[in-house]
Amino acid sequence: MTRTGIIALIAALGMLTTGLWLNWVAFSAIGISLFLLLILGGISVARPSQLTIDRQIQPPRVPKGSPAIAFLTFANRGRSSVGVTVARQPFGSINVRTVIPRLRRGERGMRTYRLPTTHRGIFDVGPVEVNRADPFELFRVSRRYAEVERIWVYPRLLPFRPLPSGQIRHLEGPSSDTAPQGNITFHRLRDYNVGDDLRLVHWRSSARTGRLVVKHNVDTSQPYSVVLLDQSSSVYTPATFESAVDVCASVLTAVSSNKAPAELRSTDGTILGGPRLRDVTSLIDYLTGIKASDAAPLEAQLLALRRAHGGTSLVVVTGVLDPADLPAVAALRRRFERLVVISITSQQKTPISFAGVRVIVAEDADEACALWNVQGR
Image (cartoon, rainbow, N blue to C red):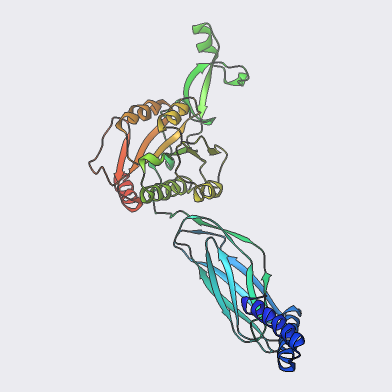
């Protein structure tokens, strides 16, 4: 019942009571008339709806700023016409309105509209809500159609070029000790470990050294990249953090462009992906909902990477760069063939150089992409 309906009900009770108490027929007649209007209004909104609505959203995953379209199909299943209807759909914290035109008996229609995708995040698109009221606005009933659907508004994916170490074969063999073992290229001799294939034992060297040594073969055609995102809110502004997430997602997409494995790490301790990952969709999904926080310092994750398996490339994405972190990055040279640090900040515009580490300082994601592609040639 609407506010108008409540006022009408109070007025009906008051007039009917006054008319009966004072024996005023006119007041009683007005009270009875209002009661009849209320009854008719309730019956009109209580009858089953003749309108059917279905909705589909395509695509469910879309980069920030790209179109996500909702397809609303509707039909009149009743014998009488359905008037103009306004459909509302909750999308995050806002409501999207769509006007459904008047439908004659058996008539169908479709409306398409664009969902707002200007902000990164995971949003639930609520059911389509249609309010139905009687002619006097005494009663209003809200009906829901379709189910709750989820849409991922991805970070912006910029055209970062793949790293050279992630796309070419190392004819001279890899330069790190942590390249994955295989049977393509001989890398070096190492001590025998329990479980090693005895066919890889180098007997001549074992006889000379007095201990078992085996051949360490590597698969030089299989790059493996690790991307580390600094989540510390103290090194970002809201705008630079969004740019850092865009950069992180873009780098992951670039390094895995040939279905190469990738790993995503964040300073809150999250580790996703790994040597067997070939599709970074789950990593981009995680970045879609990520937020800046008072996470552990970047140095803690850099120290943890010293105990990790390593890979072909390490890309560290951060905000205001602390030069004291660069030695910890450079110390990972034995674990990774290529080390890159990307600093997204508006405070520091002077280039930074450090032996063994490529440092990119940019104000936003677009500038970082341009510097990455120019320096990567």
